Length: 126
Image (cartoon, rainbow, N blue to C red; front, side, top):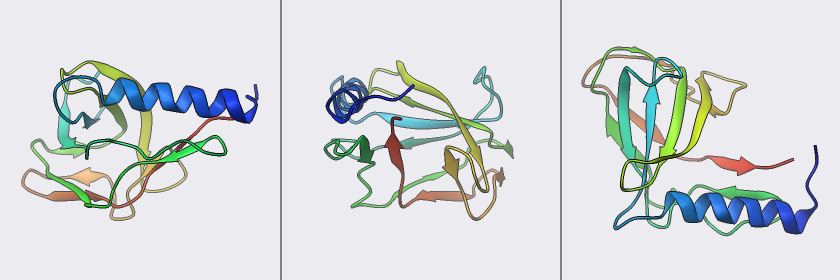
């Protein structure tokens, strides 16, 4: 499956609009499994959450580096973007130390009270 550039950019813009829906910034939750029963951390996004889509890619706005405190102990494996009303808009992104959707170079075994940071993230479509 491959989208042409115009359609790919439109799809990304829809995703960004959905995440930014509601009365405030959306967030990204990190969990131990794809059923999201154990949420390790919830990170508030900047508003708007993403820059403009171009060449079938859009970057997460991290002009202010995103950070949050870990609230539960565990291994981060999945993430989901939600709007400010708590509605999941993009789910089951994989999380690991490398070669997945969201990479954390410092590792993904998190402990309560630790701080995690996101200083870059790009969403693309084929």
